[in-house]
Amino acid sequence: MADIKVSIANPIIGEEEINAVIEVMKSGMIAQGPKVAEFEKAFAEFAGCKHAIAVNSGTAALQVANLSAGIGPGDEVITSPFTFAATGNSILFTGAKAAFVDIDPETFTLDPALIEDAISENTKAIMPVQLYGQSADMDEINKIAKDHGLIVIEDAAQAHGAQYKGRNVGQLGDIACFSFYPTKNMTTSEGGMITTDDDEIDEMCRIYRAQGSKTKYHNEYLGYNFRMTDIEAAIGFEQLKKVSGFNDARIDNAAYLNEGLADVDYVETPVVRDGCKHVYHQYTIKVTNGKRDELIEILSENGVGSGVYYPIPLYRQGVFTSRGYDLSLPVTEKIVNEVISLPIHPSLTEEDLDLIIKTIKEAF
Image 1 (cartoon, one colour):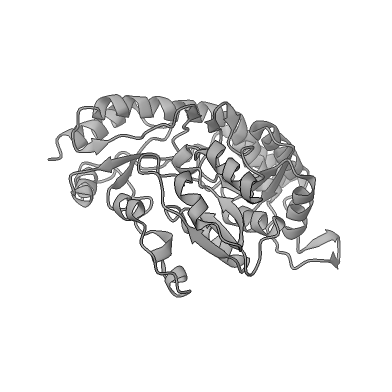
Image 2 (cartoon, one colour; image 1 turned 45 degrees about the horizontal axis):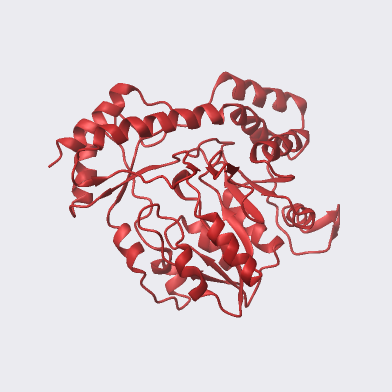
């Protein structure tokens, strides 16, 4: 096995982030404090929303968003099965049921044409996943939600700075949730953020993240300790200044790979929805010759990292099969066997990109 020369991800932490953390450490306020409030304000402006609520992970953001939207036992939330486990788990945490709908075969996001058939008397929300850094078809999803009186919760964990028809991901539904895990387009080490324009949802998010308490030592709700620390917020505040540049580098790298792989007949490069800004948290190709796993091995042998996001539909995960989920969605079943995510992060050099292209061109 060759050493990996081109990694699938590479978090970029600069002197600005290091100095900001040192400043917080010296201040004596290292839990949730003024730096979190400063980061929340800056992120709300970045997303174009009235409110931003910082939490300690993207998973916590999704769970708090569901709870704050009033989702609970007996409710159903329509979502994608082609996503990270946190999407579905956040629904189960509330006691609600995830109603899985198949995906668009080109963009891998929720297929709006299939949503209405999945709506039941118990449906309370739709949770589209803004997958790999690209928005779902939000006009259609919002129209369906409005027609049926449903809440829209964006799982925007991978889409910091993405846009849909000139509007920012994070302001396209009633609530949105971001992750700041180290591999994301920006990081706080661990952490998450909820955005909304709804004052009541904002208040409930802040209550649920802090032990269900509106006033200290008065616990009106069953809440959690999901708070972000000032140390994490200090990193995030500096990263927020850089994320647009990081995204531009990802977009440039994607264009280079698109051009280099254009004549490889067994590869389909990412499709960008009309009117969308794709920020390429992942650069995900489809391998259509049935040799996806062989290509992964060849890439590794040539020092190129890669990943399969995601190899198993959520409805086939034990946490769901043990709860009686038994379904098969044809597009999802096909896509999980075709996708590979290639390195796309801002640290890549032209030499790195050329190695990726050369390896794939010469693979078979």
